[in-house]
Figure 1: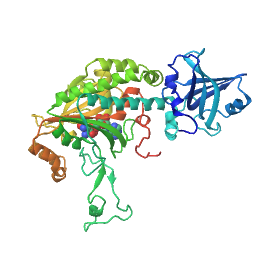
Figure 2: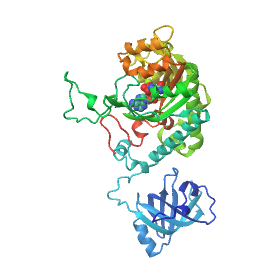
Figure 3: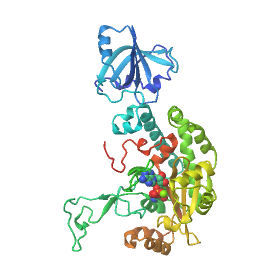
Figure 4: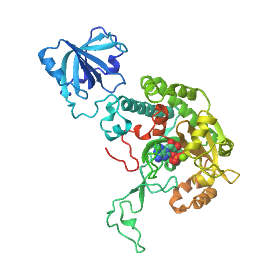
Length: 470
Ligand code: 4AD
Ligand code: MG
């Protein structure tokens, strides 16, 4: 049993706020958000992370002993309080605690505790990531992440997908883009060299070059080609030098992979998945979502409700290029068939042309990964990106190349070494099936769902270019 409280008798703030106040005795604990004194009354707001709201605690005519303890209660202090739950006369809350006993567990001296003001800038809060979960916004984000994670597993489990744990350390580049962090135990100052002067990895921990994974897809494909439908949900790492509001060096990705599935069933799955997650969030995190709607992104709830209720637009890359060129808009990055869509183009398509999520398919083969199925035209691949307003790409996926010789050709075309992918090619050699999948960036989803502007504010401890504290 905890020294300060008996777990069984403590009530969470979320429950206290919905209980009927029949003068029952309750104990609560948490961190003090604000405190006010008047002549015979001391009020403080207590939050324990169970919900956005605080419970108000009132001490009326405290005994000298209680008054001495109350004097030590400041913003940020941790306390355990007991009292009776009573109807609250104050607006916006049903109940409050009339305190009878108080333990100050940990003080937070006002002259040094950094979270004094009601609103700090997100930039400042990033510098104190160890304290920011104590704010309304970051508490709400933590609950949204939790709700979405749970819903992600529920969505797949209800549809008979198996959760596969794909590795974090890998020897292959799943995207073929060369943006990987190396994993090594060789001494950085004097690694062993081969006779040609390059680093000799044969004496390294794995006896070969190894990296942090950029995607679990290739491993998920192995399991989909045996168990039919699987998904992975884990951390992925990208050493791309993108210092933007939508890129992290470490982010979480959800990657389903389905055998006997083409690009159309893949698009249906992606669309059902996103709509399911947003709908679940609106239903089960309504207080937090209302907060984001009021404080972070006005109109957020209406937009998300429309997304939940309507089908996504589906267009080809070629149609997207036509829509962009015929718009007459002056883009920073020029638009031409063959060039990748930039974030400004994705935003224009979703915000101005289609006013909602758009799935873009059949991109030029030169700008997409080696594993995507080549179309009959020989120029495009069966890629599908889901784009959303405010953010651009939220999902990237494709039907996979299931034909052995085409895949071998594509690997070489992309400048990769066929021998490194021998096991991946075996999947096409033995019992090959059409299959497809996609990756949803978890933090992009949280950004989209909450309206938060910077991706560094929707993950507890962001890792990005030149930033990895805490
Ligand atoms: O489009 P990407 O690179 O696709 C893949 O990794 C495939 N292997 C997925 C698959 O088919 N199984 O990444 C997928 C998604 C993007 O759409 C984006 O949401 C997110 O991952 N993402 C990032 N999120 C945060 N920071 C980054 N640096 C990201 N890079 C990709
Ligand atoms: Mg992509």
